[in-house]
Image (cartoon, rainbow, N blue to C red; front, top):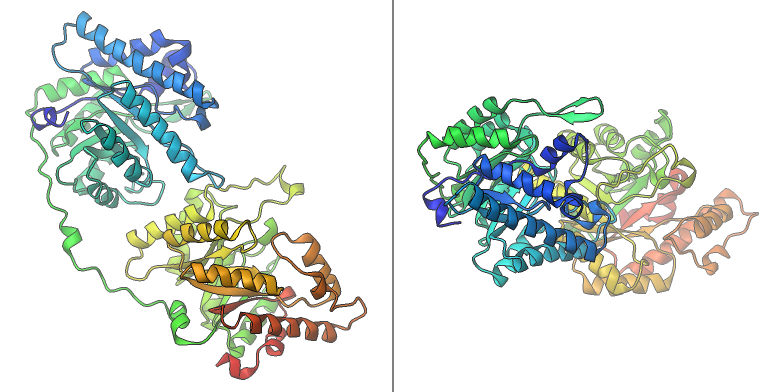
Length: 601
């Protein structure tokens, strides 16, 4: 294919999924099932696209993953093999019936496997490899990674494929929105930069997400990598809901005119995605037949040779090197619009020596004032650094991106990224947890935004360290994954025992990172009893509980809590890079009881 593309432009087929849906008059029907149930229908669709001028077809496997199909591995394998056999049969019959002398290429089609907060990256990569292996076994000419939003899996799969068969043609295409950004928050330009670093990829470009007009606008601004063929396959347009069906406009001639403009940019492989039927492909073929092929001249990626902009220093992170112990204090945003108490607490902390104030994001799934908005308010009035918690429970991808951009323009440069507590059981009927991401995936997303949007003054973010969750090996492994995703520091759950201190010490010896150790002074017997029995992830030993009794005065109980906090801090002295104070009921007066003034300098 690479040799062929030196002198020819290639036209692929259009959308198998939406055309099959049109034929069956059913919206959201999964065409991949038909590889088993209606193989003749799928073969006929392939043949229609070939008759329309397509000389590159893709197997009917875009959504042939176990998450979408709800099938086991063996059933999935059977379905994908069937798709390959159908495509080969369609090419064989078309070549004979239509007396086509040209080569018709077949690519195995792989769409993104759906992910959420519970997804396991290792399992997903294994499934991608299984699909690749089938296409290799079935003698496909190549593989198309279609409608991806990042290169995360592709950069691992491309070498894997080429190692097994060097002449396998690898095409990667990304879906971007009208502004030129993928669902992972990566710009079209940066996606091409990333693909330029993957030597094994033969062709790259964009598909789906946008219509032909917007695709032309984006392609005008993109520089494709040297040595790789270019690809463009926009949607027929933007669908509308009509009687419970998503319907695309019949605009084949308009589409073909725009594809002519795209062709004039020198794009090598030109086709269509959702909504494009054999009629669209025929019109593209007619249009291109009368236009000479001018290969796109790929320019060197000169942007990489430019000096990186100076990065503005993060004042909070700098404290880890400039003082003995960094002090972070968590305040709870209010449940209502009355912020007088939390504002008073923040002002007291400003004069007590706290380095940063952090706000939880509706902990335990109960609504409070938004952590980002609360942080902006506090920072504006106290000029203290702030660190809102950003959890994955309540925001989908669109909302998360908006939140991050809004936080940034208001000066937020520090965040704690957490997966988040689940929605309480009694609320799950009426309230849905989103969890489009887990904390590691969200960190990856913010890292991309730092490189794409905030490179001169990036957001620094930390992660939660659940030090008692599983073996030390598992804890360390998850920390390293977060660090690879850009986490600069970790905040732990409250620590109450010498055993837990030793566990933190063991972790610290194996992971080179900054750790703020959690200190939560319990303020009454009832408070201690509640934390011990009702809050998962926090271990309150009996000997700590036994230092309280129900008859203590508030002052006595607070003194005990402060004393225990001080003892834990002494044990952590050689381990902790700082302390993360969680003050029950926002009792900031406890800080004076715990920290001597000289310790706060």
